[in-house]
Image 1 (cartoon, rainbow, N blue to C red):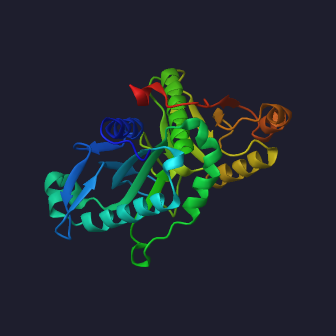
Image 2: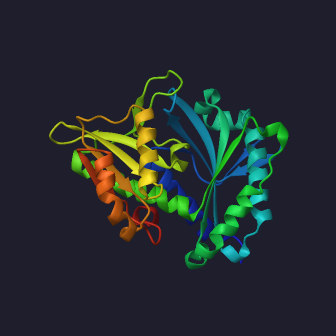
Length: 299
């Protein structure tokens, strides 16, 4: 059975939208729209989004999002290669489309150079044994040389989707505690000042750690790190080095580190060393490991 069509396909499109909009990505118009492209043909897209990227300077980016729902045994390397090749062509042909700009005037001054494929393998139990195969498919992808410098295409699959959903649940916990004060922290890069935003940019979605902060109900600023790396003391030493490089740590402000991976027995052994490494004011919390899509994506 290949990709589910009709109602199931539209349902997954809605679920992908529910995830992205939780991170303050804005959906433009309806799903499943056909747009006239520069080749005088039609390009069908599942959805178009915009978000404000605050990594260096605040700039609004437009993104074509393609939503796919598949079974692992119906999927092959050629499936992924075909999707990426087609999406790459859509980005090239639509970025100067008059039809697109007429439908969404906001895109007249916003670059369209990013695509995201959100794929959910719904035979979830089989996905775990399939994951390494999927990763090998990703490493084998080829993109036309003439487009390599312009378009960027990202792939979110089960692990990445559930990781983002878990991140969102942790943010909700912090917002419940602080009165909706949590913001992502984008450190100073290339002489650009640090910024705070409620919007998650595309690069943070794939990062080993995500920075944020909030002012609690006692008016104390709390630093937050969502950490997706390993749980060895060496891994935490590398994390601390990165945080120091970004001038993120502050002895006078509480630090919360959310860990994502689970290795309870081993982590118990090094936990005292981790606390000592970050000195005082450290609170360690665990992010939720989801076995399926969360309610906010299914409702």
